[in-house]
Image 1 (tube, rainbow, N blue to C red):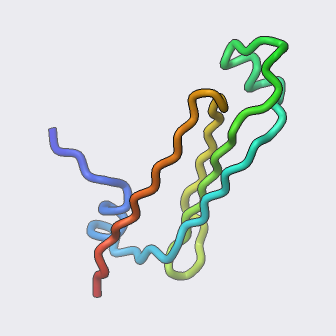
Image 2: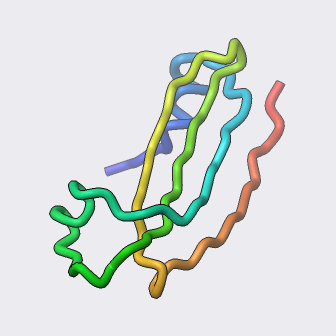
Length: 86
């Protein structure tokens, strides 16, 4: 099975141009649904929240994701390398 990235599909197959993305990392109070789904205890108060938005060349918002991480096991590494295409 061959797998391609979503971005490659958008650019190569659909011929859409990607413009930029925005990433936000914050420490927030845990909200009830997160406590329930992650089986957290009452002593857990905060988590690290990572939100990401991506936009096409015409500023159309096409992607959003959000992830919640426990602070005692969170590690953030960023490697951004996108070849310039004409």
